[in-house]
Amino acid sequence: MFGNEEPFTVTGNTITLTDENKRLLLVTPARYDNILVSRYSVELTDIEPKRRPSVKNVLLSELFKRDKTFFFIKAGGVEYQIDLKYTDSPISEVKF
Image 1: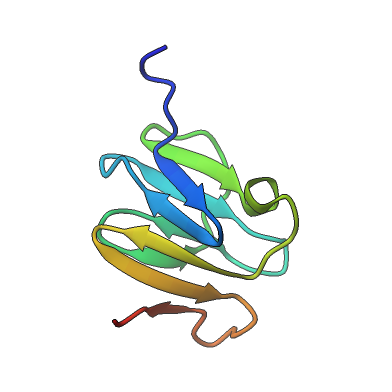
Image 2: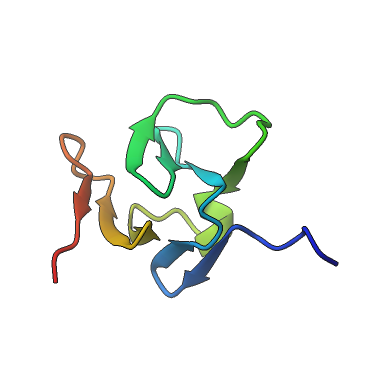
């Protein structure tokens, strides 16, 4: 029962990191780099989805039940907008 909680939640188009001791590797469609989420940053990465301690691998297509290239991530009190179609700069902080 304990220890099986996911280190993130999904509400609508937003992924929220709930366990700041864990990192998420969001596995994107093949034409894009994967996304590594920690409490300090959200960044594109070429890390392959292998099992690693403290990293939870999450397939975006499983999370949203379809291929998605536009969504939000909340981590470390900051919200990021992700739009993978903008290949030069797909990750931006959302300012309120």
